[in-house]
Image 1 (cartoon, helix red, strand yellow):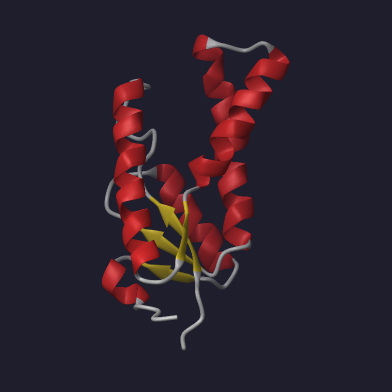
Image 2: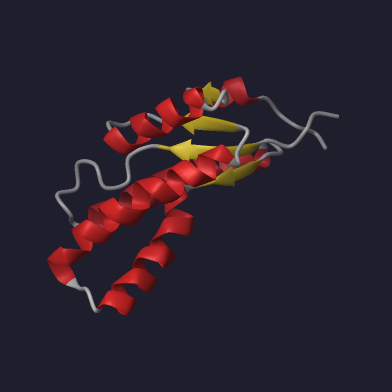
Length: 128
């Protein structure tokens, strides 16, 4: 029986959206489509935004921040949360799409000795 892997899915979230909330939401749905496939393969998927967005919202409320000022909070929390999460994962799945943040995630994974996959077929199926 193979071990269940904790796999962070790294791909475009805000990239190419020009801050358009609909495009950002579409990117998150794209990432989540891979999460379902990772889960069905018997592993535990993570997406950094699942953890970072509630933290960003809490920080915005605490600092009374809204609108354009949210960019600063995204920079302050989005990548650091993902990088902390990566250190508790076993691997990163880098999905297609241009993304500076996802490329940084891969670099953090490699620096921490984690596996990096570029295709779902590389992950393998765990038939727990």
